[in-house]
Length: 165
Image 1 (tube, rainbow, N blue to C red):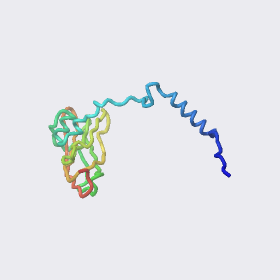
Image 2 (cartoon, one colour):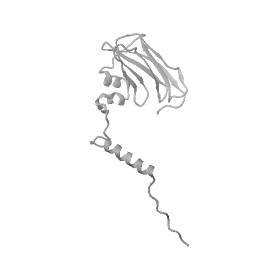
Image 3 (tube, helix red, strand yellow):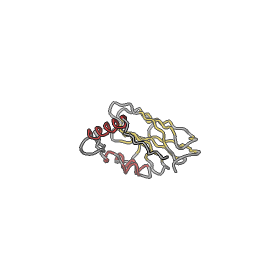
C-alpha cells in the first residue's frame, strides 16, 4: 500500500524570517542594494604610481615630488640584521624632528620598492612600526618628509627564507 507524501505548510518561523527579510530589503535606499551610507574614498587619494614604482627613487618622486634624500642620524630605524622569515620583517622608525609630515618604508630589491607610506598629522609623534614582506636580502630605507626636505636612514636586512619574489 502506497502512501502519499504529506503536504506541509511552511513553518511559522520560516514565514516570519521571510517577512523580516522582505522588510529589510524594502527599507534599503532606492538606489540599490549596493548603496552604502559611507562614501567611497576617491581613487586619486591613493598614490598608485608610487606603489607601482620598481626603484626607490621613482617611488619617492611619485610620492613626494622629489627623490633627493639627506642622510641623517635624526631618523632612527630598528630592523633585524637577519630575518629568518622574509614574509614578516618587523621595522620601526622614530624621528627626532617634530615637523614631519610624511614617512615611508622602501625595500630596494622588492618587485615594488614602496612598502608603505604614511601622512603624519601636525602634533603627532613621528613613530611608525610595520611588518614588511621582503623578497630577498635588501636595503630597507626609512624616509621622512619635513619642511619640504626628505631625510632618510637605511639598513641592510639579510633574508634567509620566505619572501615575496
